[in-house]
Image 1 (cartoon, rainbow, N blue to C red):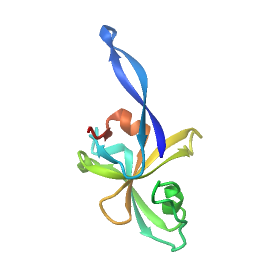
Image 2 (image 1 turned 180 degrees about the horizontal axis):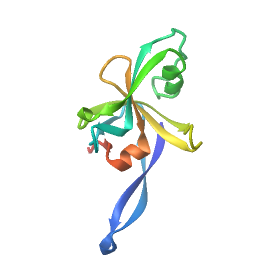
Image 3 (image 1 turned 30 degrees about the horizontal axis):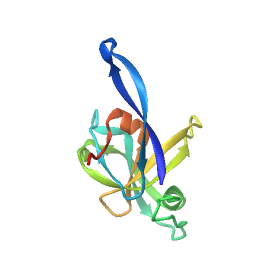
Amino acid sequence: MRLLLILCFALAGSLCAQTATEVEIEISRGDTLLIGKAKGGVFQHLDMYRKTRWAGNEPAYDTATGNGFFQSFFATGDFDVAELPKQYAGRKFVVLGVEILSNKKTGQPMNIMYLQGEKPNMIIWVDFDKAFESGELKLLQD
């Protein structure tokens, strides 16, 4: 299980100043999340990956927790990637795993989530913090 910190922005009174409040939520394998709205024709913080060739020697990952999913899916073989089209808005997807990866450009840590795609060998890669802040990803309300 992984804990993620989410920055929620709210308008502060009549000053209309933005203030950040940290909210801690627990997201883990098997949870379901809702894709929010895209501001254009595609989502900015959600990408669709399709594995097109498996090498056959992929490392296993822990299917109970999702740990090691990145290495298992991306270590070998080939895949196609595209920005997730806006037609996915309003749909629910199951979490396959959550990992903290290093951004190749900045070196900063990124909270990454993998959602089970609608087709075999398809996943949705989510830059969780940015997707949540922009409204592209939403928590399901009980």
